[in-house]
Amino acid sequence: MANNLHRALIVFDLDGTLLRGPTVCEVLAQSLGRLPRMQEIERLKDRLQIAAAREEMAGWYRDIAPAALIASLRTVELAPGLATGISLLQAHGFAIGIASITWRFAAEHFASEWGIEHCLATTLQASGAIDHVWPEDKAVWARDLSARLSIPLERTVAVGDSGGDYEMLRAVGTSIFVGSESPPVQQDWLHWPAANIEHLAYHVIGTIAHLP
Image (tube, rainbow, N blue to C red; front, side, top):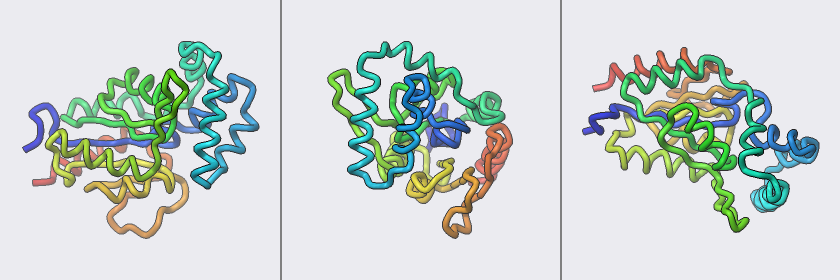
């Protein structure tokens, strides 16, 4: 039986899902005068190159006060209906998580602002070491979180916008893809490009309400 406080779980990707427009890393890079290089990094596909690029980015942040990095995130573009959608989900007994490959300090900042309890993201340690998160980690984390909260996978929802979210979407009971391009053929996925989060919340609440 699910936790008395939580009758269902929804896990959101961050960039492109709860945030639209430039990514967290692009917004940070813009504030540091490094946007062209960041745009090159965003196109990388090789994991070793991405890991090396994260080391490079960590060097950009080394002499910047954490508060200044967080302050630069005020310019991010939020998904439409975000605040209302999150509040609706919380009011209807949903536990909410963010699963992202971006930096944990940014993901936790937004989670705190929106009252979201659970967060997975790439951690930049004070020592400079990086605890990497990759797409498959998001799937494992979503399933583990569901188990920790005693919420069945049938009542677990994932929302993402890119190929990096496919494994997470496959790992849960209800999957919503908000990217502009059609995902691989998945008959049970809802493809809702650029979804308004309030509208999405109403849909998910209705879907879960009809489950046994």
